[in-house]
Length: 278
Image (tube, rainbow, N blue to C red; front, side, top):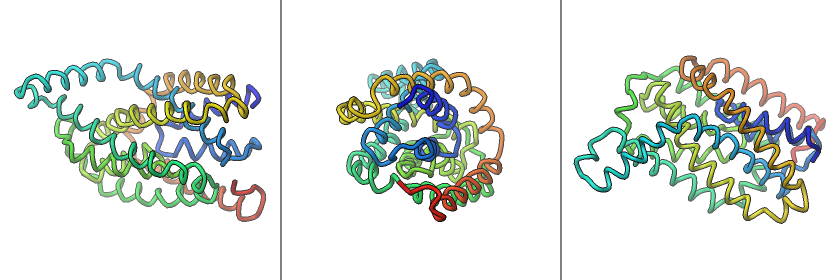
């Protein structure tokens, strides 16, 4: 991989990770346009590993919240009285909500990395999930603040987060949509999406880093992979505050229109033979 490919892919990952447009979908499309075989083992691993840059940016941005939740969780383990704290419920909720995607990701890793790595899948998912986002956007009551979050909310969000393993669905789009359907306000569902992204993406990056190390070494190379990860971190950190505020205060309309247009273009390019699906 040429260095400018790594920089470009890292920048796209860092910017799109927090938007409900599917960072994996965009990386898959861009990788194909740059001439890579998107179902090769080193490419699929590269796509997951560079997400760790955005995870590190999230950890840095939310460091005070994370320290507070960890402290609340430890206090709750020692004292039943501390379990009445909203931070305890949030900490437990994040743990519970992170379990489904870990189980599904491990059980179906081969299928996810092969059969789902197709531009047909990306195009259909971009368009299809847009209707779910439209429904969530139009029916959202947003009458529940962060203090009302329970483990049932995070479990529901965690289960739906599993759909983000399909390129084009969008992890943030999935988690935010179900959160809005359950009545949570935009700020709360956005923050929940951030918290749930940390264990999911971090675990996936570490797993791919170890399991696909030989393929990366003999294929793309660790130099471009680490460069793209570093760029992802920088871009994500520079844009995360703006993205968080924008998503929290605006409807999904702009993203829905964009997703439908992008998905349609992808399907047309593949359907007319301009680019191959894999």
